[in-house]
Image 1 (tube, rainbow, N blue to C red):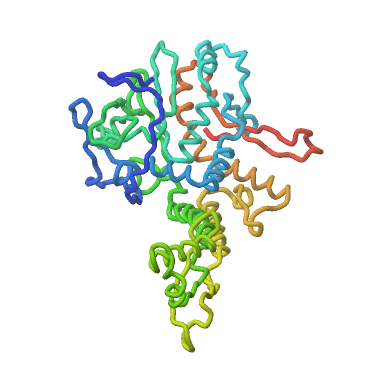
Image 2 (cartoon, rainbow, N blue to C red):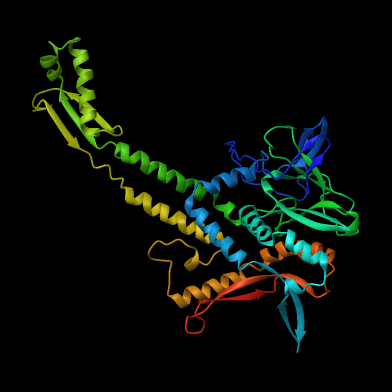
Amino acid sequence: MISKVGNAVFGQKKAEINVQGERNDGNTGGKATSNKKVITFEKKPYTIFPWGKNNRLPNEMADLLRSNADVLNLMAAKKDFLYGAGIGLFLKVVADGVESLEPIDISTLKSKKAAEFLDKTDISEYNEACVSHLVDMANLFINISVGKDKLPSLTAIDPVLCRCDREVNKFGKVSQYLVSPDWTESTIKSMVITPSYNSDVDLSKQGEFIYHLKPTQTGQFYYGYAGWWSVKEAITLANRLWAFHNNGLDTEYNASKMVRVARDYFERCGTDFEGGVAAFKDQFWENIDSLLSGEQGSNRMIADECEVGPNGLIPYIEIISIDSGLKGDEYLKLYETTILTFANASGILSNIAGVSNGKVMGGSGSELRVSAEFQQQYRTVRERQLILKVLNQVIIKQLELPANAVFAYKSITLQTLDKNPTGVQKTVSNSN
């Protein structure tokens, strides 16, 4: 696995994620030759394809994801459906023209290499990491080590650590990947350079490499683009609404009082005050602010010093309430709209998205069961194929297993209690 290149030692430690504040709309791939960044490691320059205009797009999006619990909830729901009941090893069997998958009893495996791989490799951890990286970042960077007499190994690297080399090899593919915990500077202090997987070269000769997988998207040659990234502005708006209400509780949202005081009041009452009229006036307004605000916050108040008379103030002091016309409910409805926007962008059916406005989402138990099974069986196929691709295209060939052996997903099928006392049955998803 990735360990050492030159004098740089690097492991799987997560990079610290910082927001740089620069507005970033994403990246485009293809022939965008101007999209390149030169970084230096051990005095040698490397030209990379930056991930976003400032090369910090995945870091910024990860930070934005953590900033909103509703978005986190939606992403967690999508990950649960994608994860299913885990990944298992099966035999692909065709009988009477129907293809099915039969689970392999690991204890009966004749291949010592396969048994050792399954014993030493946490497939569930690999699955969880891939699901998380694919949902959050739409990219998988799988570090693989293979060899003729070597037990294969694989690790899903956090996408925020990886960047693509700008140059392509003779096959038109990215030639190598650069892995570093910090991409904020042009001079990189710690980095590992690893060649890319190449299906045109004999697998046993590749040794250690990175297999980069992402959904096929028009214009995205180097990096994938997660669907929820398109609602970045809605997430930012939702976060601002909470800040607005926090501030509103302290300030009553807008100016809510007008305090009118006759100028003569200060002249009549402040003459004998220590410090004179000016000091008396300052103390007066401080007391009024404290009276209207209470112990917390600072009340938004309009102060009016006016004349006494037919066209002015009759009493010396008058406090008038102001109807601002701006109600907190309007902002809460706006937040509700952003929640529905998150749900639509998440790719999860609305009635099982895990959020509710009390009107649109929800349903009976049977409706939820059908929706959950539809989501798991039909809205996870492409992502599952990406995750299984490494196992079935690279790893399984190293395990000395029968030619019809495959890794596949086990899904969860909900059942009524009269059919199954547990209410749950595991089924096989042939996404390989």
